[in-house]
Length: 241
Image (tube, one colour):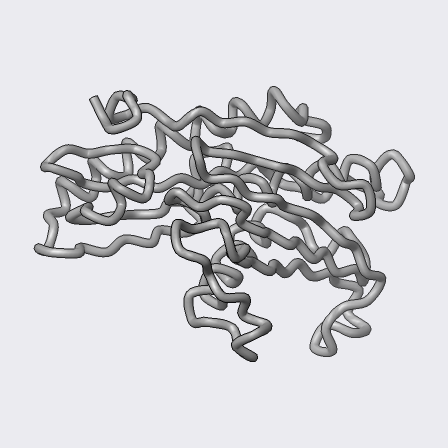
């Protein structure tokens, strides 16, 4: 058993609250155990300059750790006057995870901006953010479809993300911070509802790993993502898919 009582292949307890905020087009408050992330979607009727006049939409994401989301206070990046490399990388990770599952040619010249703010961090914040961002985006698309803003439902598939790692010579799913900090290898996997991989992030922290171990990690993460997507379908439905 793990420090929080889970089995090695067990996800943390997931809680999802839709429309958590009043003002954005859509929002979702999601928690994986002690990790809590607030995701909100804004829609702007414009696109970046490189897409102007092409009839294409765009999707981008922002990510931030709130100051008291960690055991020691995290300084606001606005105070620093710059984004850390980690923040920039995670922003891109969230955007890359979502753009393949939305038909941007079907949404017109609109930009979907997804803000992911970590309220409390206990490992797996980027994967929790991907899941929450997708749920919030899906709710926005449903509302826009009801308002006849699209001819076809532009979301192509569900998407899920989870972390997995090798800790104490055992493959463990959905790592908390304590496990992640001592993992021999840790991985983040993003996958569609049809089982297609969008992104794999994996690093051997101590020793190189075998192909056989990599396959075991992928299998464990795939199983976790299937469970996450099943929950997503239960919470937000599957309109148009």
